[in-house]
Picture 1: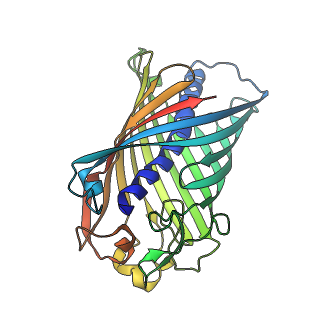
Picture 2: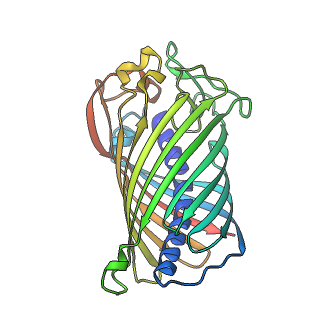
Length: 336
């Protein structure tokens, strides 16, 4: 029971950030098109604010349910969950070469509350470098689900820290390059294709954890230290009114130094790099209602046990790797 609830809420968090990225993808498309057309630059200070309600439906596959106490024999289960976020963005173009972008996002989900703020420098609207900070705290639901605390290996569980008494903090250094390859393709409504490569370096810490201790302040298991991630996406702008983009993203990431974990966790293989391939289809119902369907296929750790409690995972021994489709997600987004 604990494992599939945690998985559901983990993908909800991912959904919120994916919808924020969706707005960024639209901006990337528009800027790339404007750049190709050599349009004039608006050097005014531009500001926008959006409140977003996200409703997500998730179909958990049999693999995701295999460690559930009550649903391990089910072929799949469908859930729905809400979330709220509020985003602020500004952009200042100095000329056709240099722009500065700022953003802030606050989110409230069934398991945590968080605030993210960042600043990016954009060169010719294609190369971006920036820094971003995030702070979050989370709720715990008795013995059912734990979303904030430090891992206690003797009890094989996370301590249940009280909301807002502790928190997780992350500083992210990021860079991305957007390539509008439609510039070299025959001009057609069917040839609007954009490639994007990105990389992130994250430094995280938790106020209640010593170095080497795994912790949560949401859904991801982390330690005080660095993680890195690289990704590549191909975005295909579709010439349809309501189905406007298809995208495939490949992503690889993980902890940089396995020495950031205490010795007791070395069999877990902290150095393992997770690889995912995510096909995504984006659609727009009205100017305020939009959504996406995505199915992340993930290469994850394979352990010496096929069934286990979710909190036991850190003490298992990795014996290989396996590809799995854990969920298919559909998200509906309303801006107001």
